[in-house]
Image (cartoon, rainbow, N blue to C red; front, top):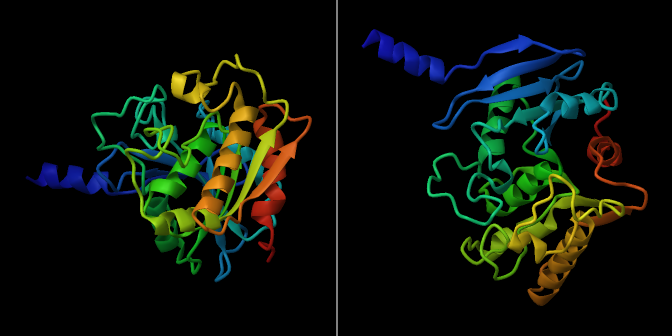
Length: 284
């Protein structure tokens, strides 16, 4: 009995150690009934009542260290906690669809590991640990991380998200009658969620040269191809879909649209374009 209780206690405990450079740390999030998620984070030089949180969501490479490292220098004098969860390939192979479906479009039979409210739980952990006063957080997502982020905004119960950067997703969940993960047919949500989704401060970034239809990580399933032949086309079509949906349903649409002419599929370049937007107003 004692051993059983001890094991349960360990499952709900967090272990953190110093790693990497610039005081980046690791914490193992285990306080849920899903596989543990290692989270990398960097604290600001001082935590006060104005400290904010930015989640950095990796792409399909799962190279979480590289993603957070890109943000260290630009944010070094900012009053923000950088948080980068690592959704491992072994435990969360379909994280881009919130563990609800495969990229082929097949809905997963086992929904126990879905990530619908994952960021909300991680945010609560950091709020409690550091006694943060902020009630909102921001998200940066690139490629598969952008897939995760826009689906999280649609399908979670979370209303704490403030600013978001979505960069160069390979495919999207359109606001149309196609089945999930390509559309909304089998994933109905209330009008209030659509209104919330379209009213976020979102910077939607595309690279004009991210147009290779044979890119090694591009989803070429039938449903994805219907959205366009490459990332640039699919992104353009998705933004048009949101504009049309908002007009037809008389919903205010507040996203910003940015195309970078010489940009291909580059994590660093998308990050550089995200810095001013997400770090604005975070000075001490």
